[in-house]
Image (cartoon, rainbow, N blue to C red; front, side, top):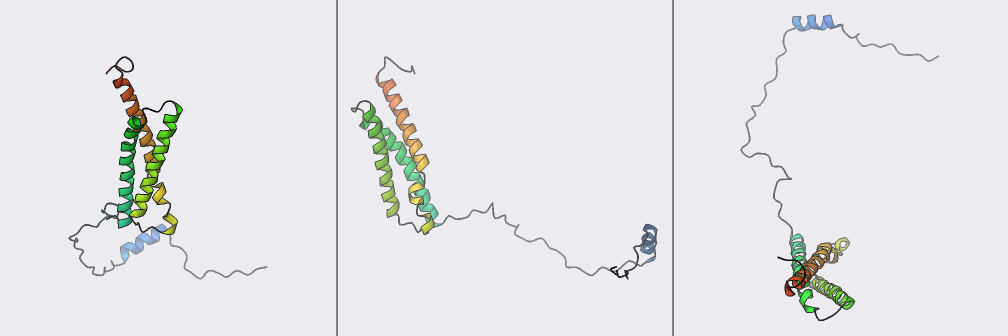
Amino acid sequence: MAKHKKKTSKPTPEPEDTEKKAIESEPEETPETEEITPSTTPPTDPSKEQVMPTETERKLNKLFWLRVGLAVIAGTIATFAFEPIEGEERRWASIGFMIIVFAGTIVVAKGMKMQLPSSDRKKIVTQAIGSYIFLYLFVWIVTYTLYQTLGSGSSGINI
C-alpha cells in the first residue's frame, strides 16, 4: 500500500473563529502610498489617433482615385466614341477600350515608383480593379441609355 504524508498545516478555522480573531486583533497599519495626481495629458487611444499614411499608401490612394476617375471618363467617352459601330462589335470595342485604359493606368502606376515589397507587387494591378470595371460599365450603360432616350425624343423615358 502507498503511504500518504499527514498534513502538517493548521486546520481551516470555523467561521465563528475568524470573526472573533478579527475583533480581537489590532488593525494593521497600512503603508504610506504616493499621492496620485492626474496627468495633464489624457491617455491616448491608438485606434483614435490619426496615423499619417506612408508614402506608399498615399501613392496607392492616388492610384485608386485615378482609376475611379478614369473609369467615369472612359465610360462616358465609350458611349460617344463607338456610336457608329453597330451591334455586338460595339460591346467588344468598348470592353477593349476599357482594358486599354486600365493597362495605361498600370504604366502610370509603374511610373510612380512605389516601394512595394515583392509580396505586394500585384497591388499595382489589383488596386481598385473591381471599382474600375464596375464604374466603367455603370457609367457606360447609364450614359448610353440617357443618350439614346434623350437623343431620340419619340421613344423611351419621359422626363
